[in-house]
Amino acid sequence: MPNSSTQQQIPVTLIPGDGIGPEIVDVVVRVFDALGNPFAWETQQAGVNALEKSGDLLPQVTLDSITRTGLALKGPLSTPIGGGFRSVNVRLRETFQLYANVRPARTIVPGGRYEKIDLVLVRENLEGLYVGHEHYVPIGDDAHAVAMATGINTRAGSRRISKFAFDYAVRNNRKKVTIVHKANVLKALTGLFLETAKQVGLNYANQVEFDDRIVDACAMQLVLNPWQFDVIVSTNLFGDILSDQIAGLVGGLGMAPGANIGERTAIFEAVHGSAPDIAGKGMANPTALLLAAALMLEHKGLNTQAGLLRDAIDSVLSTESGRTFDLGGTVSTSKYGDLLIERIRDAK
Image 1 (cartoon, rainbow, N blue to C red):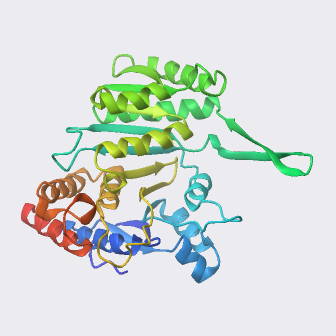
Image 2: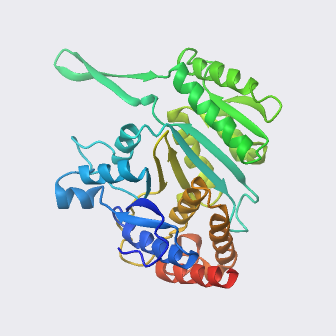
């Protein structure tokens, strides 16, 4: 997948992924060429496509590329059903210590159930129940009679993600951070998170306000009155659940970009699945991956191009004639890219 841009300044590992991944990645490449691409794509494989070609869901050559570039954009990846295969996404987070998962949600398509949504969820990405410390306890002849899992939150990890969330709020002119927990029941595991996040928040008293919510109350209030929230910071499992709920406020996972941020590496992604049932049919919506690419532009300080890209997306999706099948329209994946390119060229 060559890059036709002459501005090959910033190396980026590009992972097309599985299912609809190559189709939506192709749209991103074409749209970025129209933007005056600041990135040099270094295409690598991961997921089922990689497994079929190399025998590994996450080949070493891909890991080496990400280590070298420190930056990656990836399409959706599939993990085969059955034992012996760990999630590629979890492996990437652990390998590169991508401790912060950032999931913004903003209303783009008008006329939905919720208008003018603009909030961001910051999820701790490495701790909690996702550490995967699990085992079975046999009873009698049942080797799997009892299943046990250990959740781990550390003060250092809680402080790091809380500081990230408050810094994000300040940097992006956000007004409030809401700390989400279950400290009324999980008094140690999430009580430590709540206590630490509050301590961090006090250091930002003159810049941003903060409050806290129990996770189940937060889930309900996101449905009843999502406009009361601005930036939400939470632990791994709660953040995973709430981020998908928040995506539902703005049209679903097809509108939901994600960023995974570490000290040295950042990986940007569409958080939806690989949708093999529509792969190759021209029905996929590239918006989530394009919005993730806009986050990547901002991560590198390229705010003007990020704004140009978002404006083009807003313009195309503001009318029914520009919408893909999942949004009630009839525009193909490739045609959607063409419409974006037209808007970008007009704006330039």
